[in-house]
Amino acid sequence: MKILSKENTTAKGITGNRIRLLLLSFLLLIAGAAFPFSTTDVYAGEIGELDQAPRSFLSETPFTSQCDLGSAVSDAVNSACGSDFAFVESSLLKNDINQGVVTKDDITNVFQQDEKLVVVPMSPYEMKQLLEQAVSQIQVDPSTEKIVREKSEDGESLFCQVSGFRFCYDASAPAGQRVHWIEKADEDHTRLDLDDNTSSYKVVMAESLYQSAGEGIIQENGGDPAAAEETGETLVSALSTYVAQNTVLPQGDTERSMVVGARRNTIAGVVSRPMLGLFAFILLVVLGVSRVRRRRLKEIMPDLYDSVSEKEFRFMK
Image 1: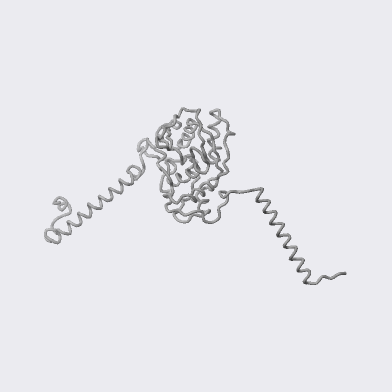
Image 2: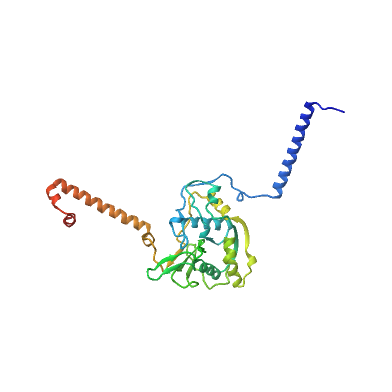
């Protein structure tokens, strides 16, 4: 019986490991060629850095109107899929994006769950029907003209953040008769004919919205539900690409859903932010001038100052 030395056994073991390593590398190369993946499929670590992030969507009213985060997400979806218009349910949003370095985890945490995106050919009439469903759950108190309910009784909402267009709806009108108009986001604000059921636009939406609303609308109007195309993109991949390409979010107009037939529940909703800032500045100036004049009166005529009431002082001015 031949006995191998320790040195020979070690050498053969090393040679065998090298062979196995080479075979494994070769198999990985074959697998990579057979199943290629794009950079939008996997994002590791830092994706981009934002100089300006959207306002907190929880501080806005995302279930009755467009919000900054919704504009960023819907624009990202529209851009990634090369579509004409985009619908993204507000109920898919969960967390904000913060200014500074943005990672894959940050993007993933924006959504309740990641979803596939599909592109569907839709007419203006079908788009109106989808929007009617989106705003049907909103209720207005006739006595106060304020929105008292944004979701259904089970807490669900189909309200959508949109891209590529803007629309106006009457929250106090009967459900199914609320959408007044839809305008393209072009320089001329071209209005779509809401009775037009022949023109076709590429509309992107999450797979869940298509299954719960879009598919039924297309079937009711004689369309082919199989015409919906998978894009290979998801909510996370689309927003990741968008953040990597932009340092300021959102890009574009955030006033894409206009509400009539209901009063805003806050003064910020009635008066624009620039006007609120101007009113605050004027108030500070008036208070400052009043304080200076009282101080001068006290320095010049302290006895008179002590005997003059606040009301009399205002009259003396």
